Amino acid sequence: MNAKLPSISLALLALIIFITFILPLVVTLEPFKFNADAILEAPSLEHILGTDRLGRDIFARIVYGGQISLIIGFGSALIASLIGIAMGVSAGYFQGRFDKTFVIIVDLFLTFPTFFLLLALISYVDASILVLIIVISITGWMGTSRLIRQESYNISKQPYIKVLKIADVSKLVIIFKYFLPLVAPIFFISFTFALSGAILAESGLSYLGLGITPPQMSWGSMLSEGKGVMEIAWWVSFFPGLMIFLVTFSLVQMSDYLQSITNQKESFN
Image (cartoon, rainbow, N blue to C red; front, side, top):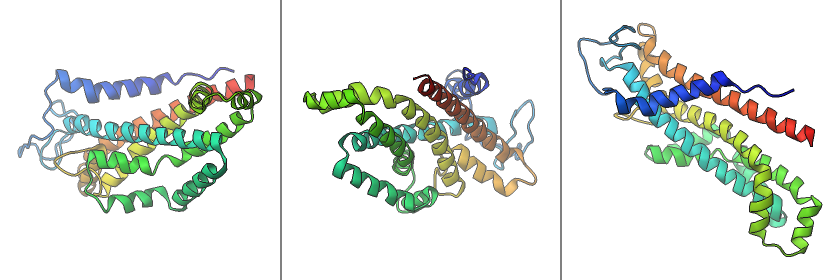
């Protein structure tokens, strides 16, 4: 049975990316404009998602905050996935001491809950977009690397790989020509999971006041700003939270689809 493409999730992601990155190029939005006459206004025709405690338009802030959230999420997920594939393939190919060192490093990282490790690292530096990308990627590569290490072990046992090693074919040629194409499905699945996890991690840090700080904004920091007025102005926190939910839900759906495709190919083989 063929896996069904999650069309709704794809459409949601495309719409969110369009609103976040393309819409500001064609429509003038003012996320920093104060309006004392429009403090905590409910959603209306003038402010479709309402305003915050300083009279700033929530929709405009979600658009610009989404840029930061998605950039941090994509950047950290990409770096974490690249570290994971490099470490995992190397451990599976070279094995021996390299693999033992790899296992020790991964186990050491996994000893601590990821979010608490994030808190420990971010507490020693001033948060910025670049810092958050680096810190989140440092704490997010282990899962990808373990999966790819296991697959690389299986590939190393294949007869043709042993023949290539005996024939003294370059290690880089073997890795790039034979290993990477075979572990690519795992990489893409892990990347989508890492992207959703990175967005949630940034949102959590910003919600706690350890991530993006004013005047910059992200969905997480907007969520944090609205917690103090949640009882009288639900929209201030609801819409940033909704955006986080929609992106992560869509990415999880895409991950499930990619995993189903990979499992079908393995079953067929």
